[in-house]
Image (tube, rainbow, N blue to C red; front, side, top):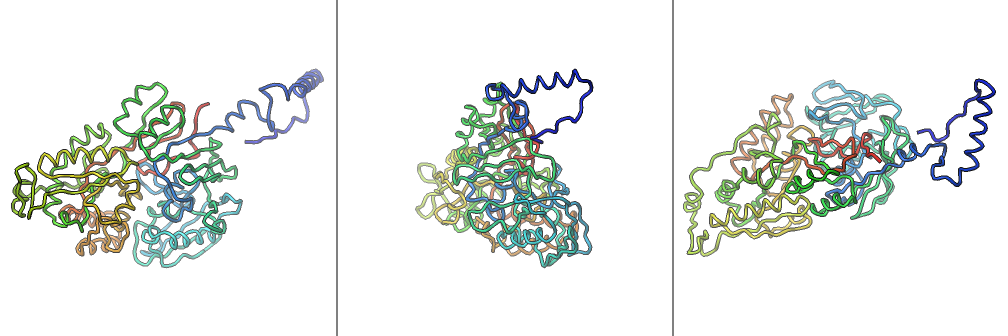
Length: 526
């Protein structure tokens, strides 16, 4: 917005000139005394528009704001970061910082870049700066390294970049939408306390560890200017606390609201519930080193007893669908069926040496079928699911101890658990490869189940080499057949994305890909 308006150089008629002069004198004489005075040449209405601020109750607590690491999704959600490619609501890759691309050979791609893009520090974005950023992301983020599988990046023009992969990577374009590849001015990252100079409609104003991330409008933005002057992501990990913050008016938007309270919000004439199908999967991960669950038969018994239909209706309140694989059925490679249990749970357990005691609890060699189930507060519906599963398994003679932990990923690195509630966005680039590589590779730190399968890893190798979508889908379905046979996880439900927002909030649209939260279009009526 222009703050100092140009005065007209001439007026028609001396009467009009006199009138304008009188009005100007009157305005000057009262400017310090009236609440409606102008500021920097802006009218009160314009000032209100320029000062619009939005506050969001956000689920997670990022440890920092470097987008080339574990906090990339949080930075993307703030509206400060951008990637070469963006995914639309149909999960199709579309141009963002890249203006276009072409595949020169199975392993060589050329990208043309947008012109007149500047970083938040005012420097011009060009091919050399994008190359430096991508190389840094590959160095800092194992996700970027695995997704891109880059052999070399070459500058072939001021706004042209050539990327050569180690092997055919048909998913490269979609993978460049991953937040770990956010483009930044590498020189801006002087130390761990530095705020990255990126290219988004907002720039980072303040990061308060464990409390909030504040972004403000970047006036030099290359695209549509942000409608908000400022946006704050308040880190509130407890779902009920996010809900109360929304109801009290403390925040304008609440992410991941407890679905059992959605109906309450719908009855509030000042609030509304927004939802959309997601590519997320709520699941159980089994500890393959657990004395109980290292036995596949025990995993299959528990999987067969999970009341998925009841969970969708009673826990999710209809905001989700039953899961039969890690991938939603809206994806072409997600249409699979769960494998039927070979016999009844009683038959399988008896065959495996279990027998029921006088209290109806299954025991083996004098030890009860007793397992520890982890859950965590950031997604409150998972804790409710845990209680439903606990109750159902107890009816069948299996005892479950629930333990709630604050940091689920940290807890899973230890070995004092048998199974755990978990949630992942399993196709966040519209492709299966990311999830498969990170969740099932024996070398991956994200393989939280500690599951190792040579046949599966062989298929994952073929998936990387697949030349087209049809071939990738075929390889993925073969991989899912192995996963559903071995059951290192039980897939429970594909939840909808559910947000609570104040009426008057505009431009906040739930997206199947969960990291486009605050955008240039975000707005709030004042």
